[in-house]
Image (tube, rainbow, N blue to C red; front, side):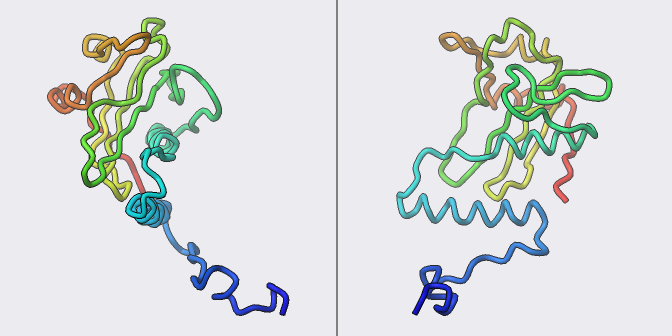
Length: 171
């Protein structure tokens, strides 16, 4: 019997494909989180890398009513309607993880962005917190590591009352 005549469960390893129709963007990300955890439990993946950065940039761009810049654009990820260059950094908290810093800034001294938005996600991709900080605030708190600069999550959380909290719409 040809493959296209086999019952569906026999064509896909005994498992029916997931139906994503009618799910919100956040619900689809929730399904992805479940799959990633299962892969980690089976030790099929171990790096923790994810499309998190793209999702954070999209949420921040939506917040500002603009589109994220696609492709490689060192230094900032979107430009607001009032021409502010915004860099977005994010981290996701999963069981057993203790992320200490956001992604590194390349060529930080070149002041390639005006504002930084940091987004902290729960394991299921729900936004835990998001803050906007001007470049000058970031410059006072980054730590140089070799040729790059890092901003610790602790630096943000310790001073979050001095930052602009953002409400990011995940509907």
